[in-house]
Image 1 (cartoon, rainbow, N blue to C red):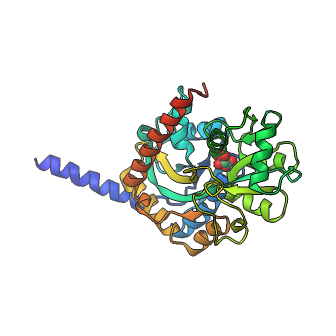
Image 2 (tube, helix red, strand yellow):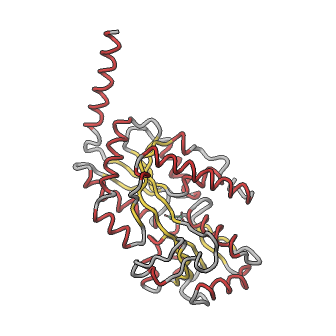
Image 3 (cartoon, protein in one colour):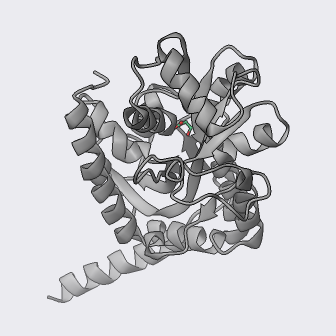
Length: 327
Ligand code: MLT
């Protein structure tokens, strides 16, 4: 009995020591499963804020792109669970298990959930020379010419892919548009501004500046209500107001660590995240791009996990109904 108590005391002391020593001066890598673009933007802004929340810490952002974000997520699922390799991923964490049947990770089993970050609305945008200026004209043009038009996305299971699928399934155009996959919506946006692709549904964190500068045309937002307080996005209707019943899509982002990362360390990271979600600078950067940092119970790891589990069930039902898979 004495030995057991001594052992328990030892474990607790070492856990305490671990937490105190973490992160020390070793850099923490945050993997972004896309190239520079909307998720990269959220992650770099968060890294800046986490540095303030954890004095003396150093965060580096690494882009590991491809296959709708699954390559970067796999990298972190298989990384050493020591708190020095993290992942920022979005709705793709819930969508990819439904689309990729040979996925190398199971979200609910291979990751520690560290809390949610933000909710990002999406916008339907078109190339600058697109032959329409209002959503109504845009939708009518798509209906009449869908077979000859294309839509860009960031890979199967990506936010832009999911949005494009949901929108097209509701407008019921005669023929499906040709889909053009990219590694992320950062490079897709370059092609859209250049007129190489016609349409894209993308996060406001990547579209707001291009809409404001007139380098792309915007037609609608995907939130249930228009973004009436945003200086740029307030000018566009919601798809629901345009008759797409129940259309309400925002892209949530969360922070993750490999399964088995010590609880003492995940606690330090969750507390740092919570501080960042109260950081006025981080909040301002998000709001400037039409996004909202999370302020509800989803900042708690167990609630974050419950939320993703519910999203997985919802998305799997939709994917199985469509019967189209990535592999
Ligand atoms: C990105 O960062 O490129 C996006 O999140 C891609 C997407 O999911 O549409």
